[in-house]
Length: 410
Image (cartoon, rainbow, N blue to C red; front, side):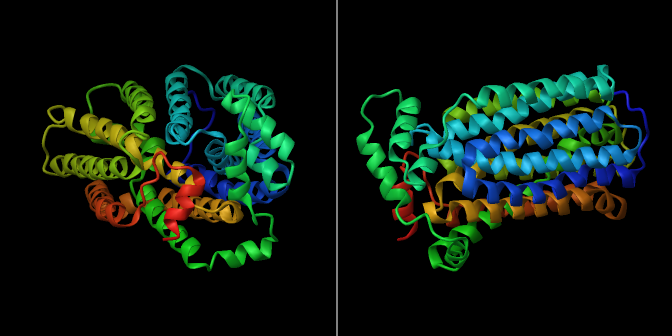
């Protein structure tokens, strides 16, 4: 991408990190708005800061504009992703809920691939203009889709809830599911203070700790950081192939894998995908660290070109199989109706914090310890996710939201 200004390592680090500061703000705004206006309106509102991000990018004349662009992008993302996961979890049939949420996460991979494909050939201003178009289209088209029936039932509007269910199910008789939905939301319309107190209930606290622990492993995999620094990693690894081409191939691989996950997540279950994903990511990171270790022994980088490419390709494949899509599915499933919004907020805040810490410490960690130590440290830590998932993550495939709550309370 033709940048009108050059960034120092420190400025580039802040550009990468400000996104996650914005996510903290967006998570708070989104959770507050969801409480009163519903998931759909929050998703539509998230289009405003996302559009502002591209407008700031168009106006970029200094790094300050980029900072504001990333903060706005973070605010929009912080509002969008938690609300979208909850929305899809509430409107989807239990038999395809995991697939639908995984498909939504994979859509982000499509956007990343298109960005990597356009980046080398467009100026930053033109790139922002092009990216603004789907932002506007989303707001226009999503406004035509009904609100979640859960939101209507939560506010006692049973007729609208039934109409929404009929729209999503394409069935004339949804009385049985509507009754189950009413049972699920029963008692959910409580005060925010009561909901905060619910955090201390053993079942809710257990689920919160389990999800927080899982997300530590997700962000320790450094997938956000590696996506941001992929081209720099390839340049430093001394590959003999143009790095921007490899980055495009990596982006395309995540789309292909993400497409297959939509068929697997509801067939093989959440836990199995997480275990395979964690093990594969750990091995990939160790292999990437091995490449830099061999470089430190003065081996010819051209002979080793296959190793970093294979490592990053393997990393992209395995992280897309479980660690990226599955946690979003679990967030929409594991919490009772009266606690979903608070739980989503807490997890979104935690995720933004984890993402900021790992993004901001990545470059200093590289400077102090070197690539080998960094990637090996990440790899061995992510490997611990395998026993963690096996012992602590419940299997939720094919169960209704009410059935999942009955299971988690046991």
